[in-house]
Length: 436
Ligand SMILES: *Cc1c(COP(=O)(O)O)cnc(C)c1O
Image (tube, rainbow, N blue to C red; front, top):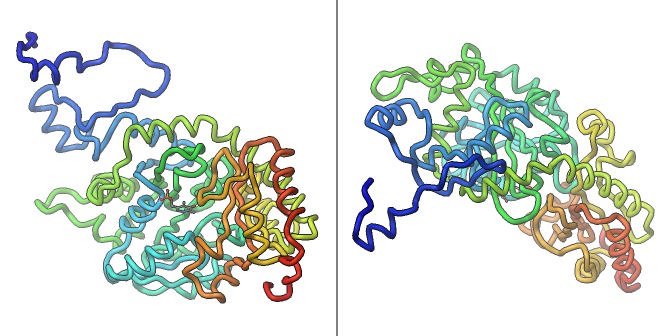
């Protein structure tokens, strides 16, 4: 292009192309769209989806992070979205239609619970909640219109470990997918697809990004859609397109569901990740194994230490032999049971208040999977909209605190906790009988 003369023209056109270079770190393609070379190129992009045209349907930075996540999960393809909540919505709406039925574990993230009981309910999708660790409960909840099962690998607050193989076996019999939220376990500790899950979702805001700066989410599809067996249950994948062209299953076979998520659900509902956030998530993942190793080791040490403290009546950490799912943790989580768990103070809510307000190193906030240690009082925050009975069932008592252990030196974490526990006013612990 010959250099234009006008000031306004030059301010948007001159110098808008970076010099050719070969950066070692992932470049951030912070661009809404991408140039087409000629008419064939644009037509081909719109026809086949190949290459990059507009960042809501594809972006090179986002694509690189998606390939990294698909590889680490052992899945076929990953779709990055703007939050963990968006990942759950996109995954569920890729398989469920009005009139369909979902079976979900009772103990799930509160945001997901609200999505199922309120938003999806309004769209005509009904959910039955079951005890995640009873294969029989999943089996007997199946109805002719059940189209998916949903559970978390490690639950908040009781730290229940999901028996993925047992639950996915039930789903398989009926040709429906088990969708697993693996936020607490990360692909480093657990790869649910290897145990039979069909779709894995994460809040990438937590361990994957790892440093508490950005939000993100990801859906990983296993690419094992059984067209013959499951096709009839999911007509949106098998019906020809509006002009009579081939269906998703005709075009993509076992990858049909993953492609449907990528082409028809995520870009239409629109929770597109910023390429800048994708970069931070991609960079975070580069140290995932190092952080999670350290966090899990720190968490085990803290859990053991807390279990010995007189102010603490219970510690719900699957990495401890006292936990009812410890054997499952040994089977599914040989590298460590993660770093998010709860412990319950004898002194009830007053003691919990004292601890969160006294800790200095451990930050009082709602988040988890950060390099920093964080703490929250679930009964008055995440679980405040639940009945007392529901809270008890979830393992959330007035004196329960959820902690997410970071990568700090273990001695410093323990010293901070020791100071908070040592200074609980006697008055608070006198109330023990009332609280548990
Ligand atoms: C945080 C979280 C979510 C929601 O993720 P956001 O990134 O906050 O939208 C979903 N599931 C689990 C288990 C979570 O911890």
